[in-house]
Image (cartoon, rainbow, N blue to C red):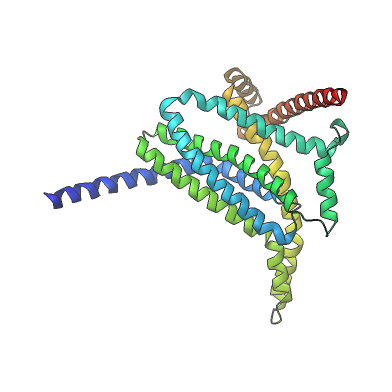
Length: 311
């Protein structure tokens, strides 16, 4: 009897793992675009960090990302079981935050006079220019911002995965296993790739300086060395665009009339519907982010004025 029970248990486990494998593939397909956005955003977060500090910063953000997942996976399961209606409002808050962050980057870059004097940016710029300044305090701020952004994107990835496997009929145990697999694979994959991307220039320099390197090897090293800053600049731009695409997409999906309105525009255009949808989400993300940014700026100005009057 004990042997038969063990065989039945093993058979059940085999069926469970088969279901988990299938559902993990479904979740991976659904979240592929967001994972790409997450990669671009996290690579963009380490721009401006000194080369000797890039890997420590990435490792610090990766540890924060694992902590995020430890919070988000159980939270997603509990919310989906007890209060599933709360998922959409939480995602909307995340979408507003991403749009706000993206708008702040764009406006600060192209229209800095529209924003008040940013002492944090000025201090960071001065610190980067001064070799005697300890960058640890500035890195901590950068790491915190990266972990906040990771939290939002991780939540979006897990919620989309949860929706996909729920539609496939997953039970609570299967949901927990699939979400855990997605969380681990996404975190290791993204931060491993980010570490590789930011060290391309070091690898290129190593190839150039090898004493026994062939001409082909040295040319490859020179190409990697020259391509590294261009790749980082591209990822910085892609990361900002990703904020608008993901943020705008979340906002559109969370407001049914707005989503129907955008779908109507896409159908009227009638060509390249996927690209047009992304473009509309990006525009929506920028507009909403700019509105939130100026509201927050106005509130801060009013508070600053009151504090000055009080003193």
